[in-house]
Amino acid sequence: MNITVVGTGYVGLVTGACIAEMGNTVYCVDVNRDKIENLKKGILPIYEPELDTIVVENHAAGRLQFTTSLKEAMAETDVYFIAVGTPPGEDGSADLRYVLDVAREIGSLMERPSVVINKSTVPVGTADKVRDTVRQQLEARGVDIEFDVVSNPEFLKEGAAVDDFMHPDRIIVGTDSARARQIMDELYAPFIRNHPRMMFMGVRDAEMTKYAANAMLATKISFMNEVASLCERLGVDVENVRLGIGSDQRIGFHFIYAGCGYGGSCFPKDVKALISIAHQNDFEPKLLQAVEARNDLQKHSLFNKVSAHFSGDLEGRTIAVWGLAFKPGTDDMREAPSVVLINSLINAGAKVRAFDPVAHETAPREFPEEWFTEKKLEIVDGQYEAAIDADALVLVTEWKPFRRPDFKALKKLLRTPVIVDGRNQYDPAQTQRAGFHYYGIGRMPTH
Ligand code: NAD
Image (cartoon, rainbow, N blue to C red; front, side, top):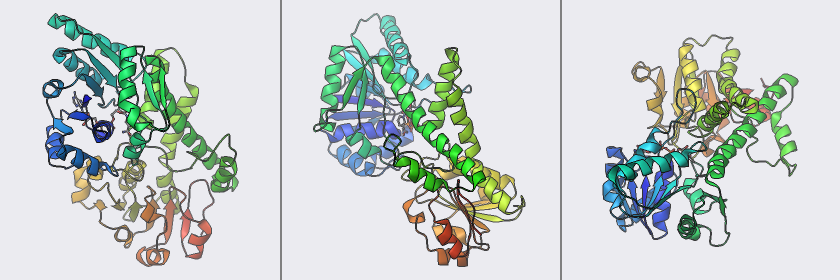
């Protein structure tokens, strides 16, 4: 099959590369010229495990092409994936401008019967808008070409995106067209040979499924963070509670970790968008509002713990931060809890010395340039370097090298032995024996 993927971000590039890996010819299109020029040279715009190899190999084999010209790509294909961003607008609703731009462009260039597959996360009813937009363009050109619009939301996780795409839990396809269904079956057959996992449903059902999935995951996190806050007030260790409830098969262990709040490009924006969808339909989404409110509070919890330890006096202190990306395995800094923490620390007069194994290029874009020139914020090359003469260490992202640190070395490097563990990675008793003041999430501090 010849396929065009529009948008070469986390979703588009992974989709294009994985589909090319199965022998298809794929054009990846993006409006960002630098991204496309770099991709042609084998330089990837994002960090994602295993992605560089399949991009470079498939490009070398001629199966994966990169271009800024949809027209060039369309000369060869009749199956289009839309994988552009749907960021939150000012009112929290999903901004569909990029999706509809692509629909307009497809309509203005389409020459033969086609399938337009939407992979971006979009509100219920967007497929209809895409269909109307393409049709208007065809009518303006005075041509009548048959086309289908399919909803095929993506469920990959950043940090494991290639593996998720290659071995999906399920593939959701919203369509009522037999022709589109056959194409989707053919397209995904290599990914589900041993476990047929295609789920066909209505277009609107598929669009809603994606939001419901992300809202459910965000709810589990906020639920556990709420329990954790209560545990802190009751002298209970939330880690024992987690183990206790997770062993109930109806609950399970996934996504019930207390922490410093969810971030990333999906959960915050999708919960906001679903709240906005509810309001547009005269419905008060009380649970979703609480999920979002709890998360906003949770993102401030690390700063509050650091500040409380120093009785609110952070002027002139240096705080070491381990982990900047919103989660391990990615360089994505969108809505990362580290941004809230670092902003609060610097606004309170502290200096920050941070280390992240991969986000050293994406992280600086999140902060004012003068913070770097004035040395209020330094991003250093090693985790122990960050701790030198710092007044406290805050663990924000649980990258593997942070999980079993050399506490003896840390104790020598830190000016005061304070650890704030935003992911409950350390044993409070062990850190106490090693001579630290320890603060976790949902557990009693030790001194
Ligand atoms: P991204 O911001 O990483 O990439 C979007 C890309 O689209 C950018 O490279 C941008 O230049 C390009 N683009 C914008 N307008 C364009 C146009 N008119 N023509 C060509 N290219 C254009 O976004 P992402 O994280 O890949 O997310 C894309 C969609 O997938 C969103 O709706 C998101 O909610 C959804 N999604 C994301 C994830 C994830 O983990 N990132 C997972 C599942 C679903």
